[in-house]
Length: 158
Image (cartoon, rainbow, N blue to C red; front, top):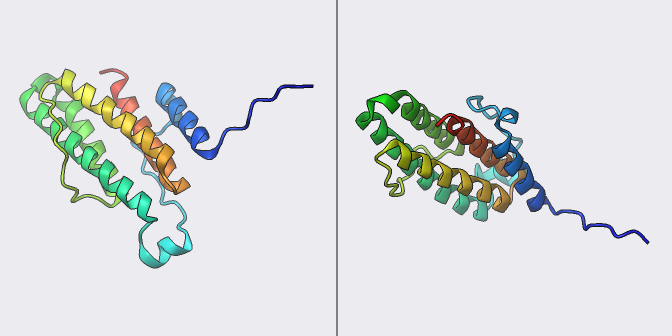
C-alpha cells in the first residue's frame, strides 16, 4: 500500500507559485505591463469583481498607495537613493493603475530612510502574496503574485 500525500488546493498552489516567484525573481517580468485577464460574465456586466475581491483590492490599494508615498519621501530626502526610490514609486503607481485604484487613500507607512523603505516594501510584498492566496478570482491572484514578484526584483540589490 502506497502512502500518498494529499493534493494541494488552488490557494495552496497559488501560495507556492507566489513564493517561488519571490525567491526566483527571474521568473517574473518586473516592469512588464500585465495583460488584462479575461473577465467573467458578472465582471463584464458590472466592471467589478466579486465583493470579497473588491474589499481585498481596496485594502491592498491603500497599502500600495502608502508605500508609494513613503518611496517618494525617501527619494526627496536621500539623494543617493533617489533613483531607486523613484523607481519603486513609479512601480507602485503602475500597480495602482492596474488595480483601477489610482485615487486610493494611502495607508500610513512610516518609512523615511532607505532601510525603513526596504522593510515597508517587504511588508507590502508579503501582503500581496497573502492577497494572491485570498483572491476569489484566479486572474486577480495572478496579478497580485506578479506585483509581489516585481517588488522582489527591485529589492534584490537593495
